[in-house]
Image 1 (cartoon, rainbow, N blue to C red):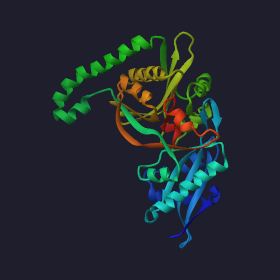
Image 2 (spheres, rainbow, N blue to C red):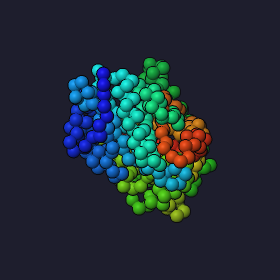
Image 3 (cartoon, rainbow, N blue to C red):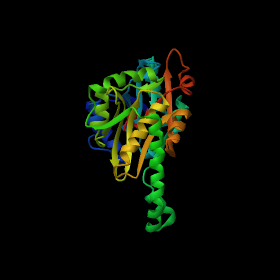
Image 4 (cartoon, rainbow, N blue to C red):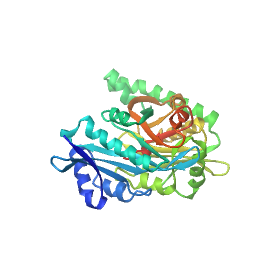
Length: 349
């Protein structure tokens, strides 16, 4: 079967894209198209349509969402590759590969340019064949706050689970407090309704503290964490007690008895991340949730820092892959052991 690639016109093909999602994806929000295709503060995406020549029908698509990335302190034109969809009866190597190659060709055309993607496990081999390279595992980490639910899985008895949960919960709180007493005496925290001017200095510092990180500003963060059709995030902020300077935040939402972290940022290296999340755990221990979940990709040192403050790797969701069309194409080698991370907020959902 023969296929071709055609650029999409968002006004003309908007309904077509929504139709492709509804046929092939689950849980697509009705407000998704307006949110990410029309109101993205970084601009509208470049969209490629996949046409089946025999039937003259569009049977697939891929979007390149503008997402500026800070590379060694400097912004570089970058895109998140997302919404890759191919109708079920056409899901073979060729059609999907043609979409990925169209994205790479566009990146080369706009060089210097970077493409970042978190493909599904099924489409990952196609992305690698097209020319992407793996930069890390996109993993989910969980920190348990209240153990009763988890103990019940083993003991099957609510009474026994409750008996053992009390000392275990106390131990988890004690371990967190010991870390905070020794490392975070000078910090306070608060819950905010939005990102304000106090975050400007923190967001400016990020580009120089990380070799590779998605650009963050108040306009982007409000759109991504407050205006999303998938739910509005609350904002946990930490600051220095002495001068009230903002030095970190966590954007999160509650899902039953689990808290999901969508994005976070902090001033320093791994220790700054540990202080931020340990303070967040202290706050959450006063609330209802049983656990805190965070999904991200980074280097092994960063992952080790998470484990040292009680987060356990729950699963590897998929791989983070990168394609770079730069004068210096050693970027993947350079970032492998440097300070960098990518969160759920950097993705297309």
